[in-house]
Amino acid sequence: MRDHARQLLEKHVRKPFFAAQYAGDFQRMDPEAVDAGLAWLDQRFHVIRYEVRHAAGLHRAMALHARQRLFLHAVVSTG
Image (cartoon, rainbow, N blue to C red):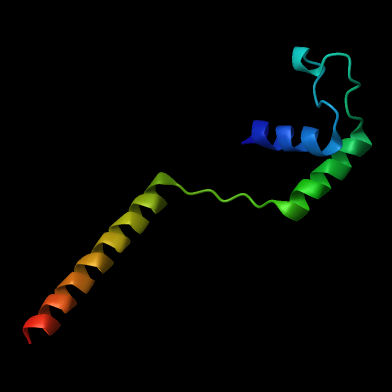
């Protein structure tokens, strides 16, 4: 997740965050550029995280809802 945010920041500021091999001879972004880029990211992106337990609960709820709809459809069809 952090690496993805760094990559978005580098694309927006158009300077590398690290002095790494991929950066070549480009000058790294300064602290002001980092702050401005983080503000830009904060305005445009929101992190959505799901825990496995939460996702499993959603799956169970969706399955239960689907079974209830099938049952109601069967009752109405035979009624």
